[in-house]
Amino acid sequence: MENFLVQRKKYLEHLLKAKDKHIIKVITGVRRCGKSTLLMQYQQILQTQGIGEEQILSIHLDWIESEPLLEYHALYNHIRNHMQKDRTTYVFLDEVQLVPDFQKAVLSIFEQENADIYLTGSNASLLSGELATLLAGRYIELSLFPLSFAEYCELRREPPSDAWKDYFIWGGFPYLSQIAPEDIRLDYLSGIYHTVLMKDIMERRNIQDAGKLKNVVKFMLDNIGNPVSAKKIADTLTSNGHKTSSSTIDQYLQTLCDAFILYPCGRYDVQGKQHLKTLQKYYAVDMGFHRLLLGNPGRDTGHILENIVYLELLRRGYQVSIGKVGPLKIDFIAQRSNSRIYYQVSISILDPATFQREIRPLKQISDNYPKFILSLDTLPLEEDGILQKNIIEWLMCESNAV
Image (cartoon, rainbow, N blue to C red; front, side, top):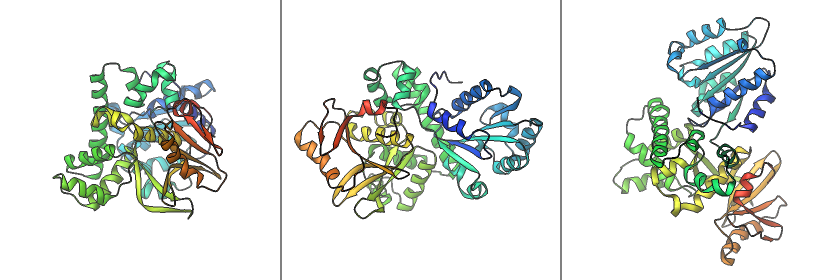
């Protein structure tokens, strides 16, 4: 078990709100982002609320002792044999996608027994196809990410000014923050990366060409925050001696998103009020992979800042798009319910030309939703109600409203 000392408070609050509701809770996220630890923390809270240990059935399906349960009949019978009479049994199935047709066991328990069911998985296909149809209206999904910067500071017990450089370079995988030597950190990241590529992508999707897949990953991490298309990627790889097609690239991008290595960010035309189908961007789940595959991030500071802000907006529950206002671009439009916030992200806006470049698209927007420029500057700037905020301070802010 990870030596994970910080509680994932927002995720735990979400689970507690759904506790005892007749709905399956599905927690998804990249490997090693803390799903198992979140379940452990939640189970500890349940026990403080008077839930007995005998009411908690926790099965880690990626542990060797669980191998006999990697068949849905066996899993079903095991759960049935541990159900409590006249009391709720809290059933936790970690990495449930390892059981073929697991949904048959889960749905039978869900329909027949007094059970509160929690599932985790490291692949988005967990909720696709037949399962999505069968579970329609009967599940909620909680997307788990590596540590936010605020969580990272809490875990490291460091002030933000000291923790920032480490987080910027190495990202937020929980256990990585406990490792000091750089070569061991790289080995740890390499282990996560290759496990995801081999188990969650190549084996599940029957992809044979590991070299081509790795080239696509490296290309995408080297183009964080740049508009891309499958054709552009295919043409670039082909010109570099790795012949491929747009359809193959489309397949690879989908599998990388399903395994939570990449997250797509579509475009939205603010003036036309419509989502656009071309030239979306992709962001990485964690900057540690960027450090692993591309080395020192110094040359790509601006796009890494974008990536960190994008992930934070997802953590805060927003749907995020990149914006278009005529010929001008907005880094992010964050929407939730009937609210919207516009963001520009820049290393610094102290140079007047840079300031005007960043603020100009925001001035073209006629609505009254909040507009911000996020930068590493500490000197506050404001013009026409558009505020500059320091990125580090913004990341540490607990409020979801800014």
